[in-house]
Length: 254
Ligand SMILES: [Zn+2]
Ligand SMILES: [Zn+2]
Image (tube, rainbow, N blue to C red; front, side, top):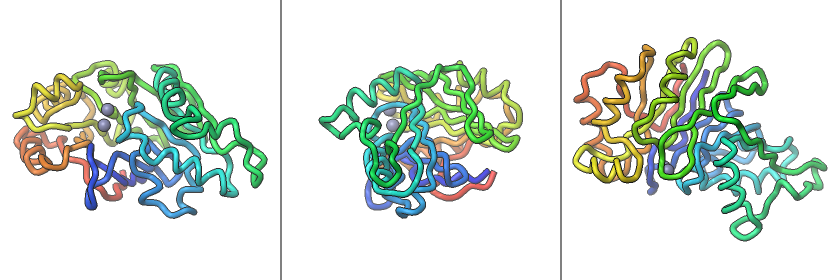
């Protein structure tokens, strides 16, 4: 499968983008960066977006993706998330105050709403277009669930933001043919207490998580905070585990 990393950082400036991944051009995981890096027609090809949690760096472009969809000849965008995550997102963002609730507006072009919300039960696999999606709870400051995507006999596990966790690793270890794991290392090792307090990982705790992962596939650290990206990169290298990598903003073929 093709994984386009549109944003791999937990902060943004002219050269770094917020979290947004696109698989085979139609399935997105998180929406920090989607509209800001995709043409109008590329956006129209996105059929579904899985949201890990409602923090702004993971949803920034979602209101704009939905708004654009409203004026496109394309079917509705389906937003998937764990039930609790979706409730927070709709209640706090798509509440008619921060942004309209486009699930209740009918587009004159398609005679359908621009967006459909699909709550998921963590741990229970669903199938869309022959692709399996399993939301699995992770440990963050607010309700958050990563996702295991199974497509064409391959699988990728995305944790989204997380501190030390276990359930998603147990599930990943049981999933056949995992070709990549995308997790995080937001802060450098000398900010371990901040990482712990905010339920994120540092390269040290990323290393502890690696020991819980038994699959033989690259494990990527995403969401680096910009000022520390080089430190985090060298600390990941110093783990001396050949699976440990930092996630780059580029296209991966897996
Ligand atoms: Zn984040
Ligand atoms: Zn977060």
